[in-house]
Length: 213
Image (cartoon, rainbow, N blue to C red; front, side):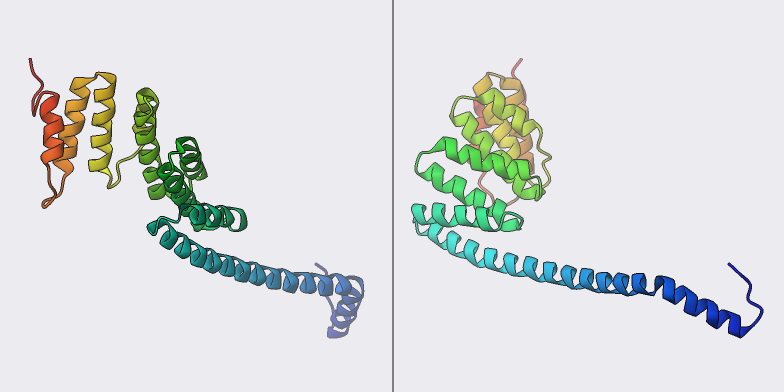
C-alpha cells in the first residue's frame, strides 16, 4: 500500500479508488442485503411449512385414532408431498405404515417403514421403524432378514423391546441359546411395575435362566 505524503494525496487517492470500485461496492452491498432478505424469507417459509405440517399431522393422528384409514392415507400422502423436508414427513410415513398394515397391506406398510429408515434424520424414530419392520419381516417368515435389521440397532432406551424381539427371531431360526440370552437381557431391562409373565414364559420355553446342559 502506498505511503501518502499529505492528507490531500489521501483524499485524491480515495476519490480515484471510489471512482474505480464504488460501483462494485454498491452492488456488493445490494447483493449482501438481498441475501439477508432471502435468508430471512427462507427461514419464514420453513417456519410456516413446519406449522402447516404440524396441523396436518395432528388431524392425521386424530383420523388414525378414529379408524378413518382412507383419510389417514390421503392426508399422510399430502404431508409427504407438500412438506417432505419437515420432521412430520417421517412421522406421517409411520402413520401411513400403521394404516396400511391395519388394512392388511403389508407391502405398503414395509415400504413406508423403509422410507423412515432411509431418511436417517431422527434416530429414535428410525429405531422404532426398524423394530416395526423387523416384526413385519418375522411375521412374513423372513426371520434372517429381520435379524439382520435388528442387529443394526443400538438399544438406546429400547433394550426391553429390542431384546424380546431378538429372542423371538432366534426362536424362529431355531437358535435356542441365543433366544434364551436375548430373553434374559429383556427381563433384566424390564422396569419395576411391568408384568414379566409373558417374557418369563418365553424364557422358560427355551431353557430358563440357564441353558440346559
